Image 1 (cartoon, rainbow, N blue to C red):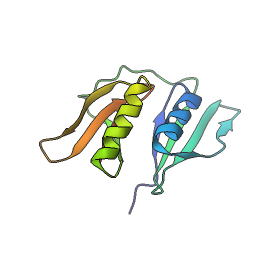
Image 2: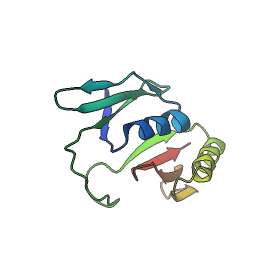
Image 3: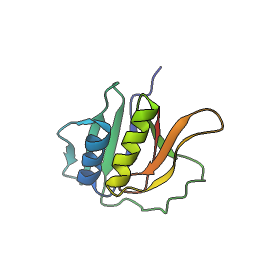
Image 4: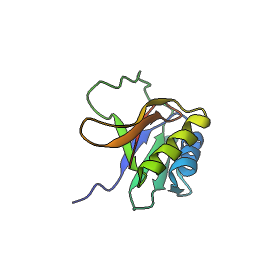
Length: 127
């Protein structure tokens, strides 16, 4: 058994699509639009085959994000090395994205940083 994909509702499909392509090497499909419901989505595929579906619907409910709640908290990407974690974290910070922790070695031995994407979803970057 494997996870086929993870889905994330977003406010700005194009901006989020560009973010994952630019910083995480995603490849995108051409997108989907249901003209009847105005639902739109993109599937983003990453180097190892993992997929993220980003979706938008005009009737989405916007909830405030709290990083110590139950449920979805972050997506984690392996950068392959400490140097790559440092480099990607710096690229994101230089581009104006908020780094909320790290890079650092956690108490359980992970080398990681955590940043917020354009819509304040937490992204963990590990080695």
